[in-house]
Length: 150
Image (cartoon, rainbow, N blue to C red):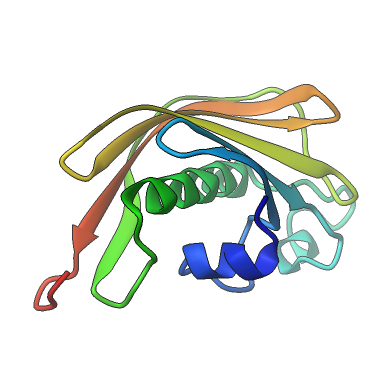
């Protein structure tokens, strides 16, 4: 549904923090399914952990949030720009169920629970081979940058 070129249009993130490779499904205002291919070449694996590489939980949460941000931008019919940011406002109920490592493909699922005044609440989860790796409720806020029009 959305290749890496479209993903880059819908997220302000770039390497090494871009954590969505492709969007498989997207229902405007409802849900998104995206993937992140986890590679041994990612810089984080040099230190986390050299003897047993594991994707940090905070990056799994960030990947879920990036998928949610794509859903939000498509729903708002906007693209990211230099006048506003879309950032975390809260993370609730985060749970990690299995490690994620190089060679895994992370399936990112986010469902919009509600949106009010630029703040979206999402139910999100990440899976590897159909097994739950992580889940959380995410609050993300779209805000104009101080001193800029938006």
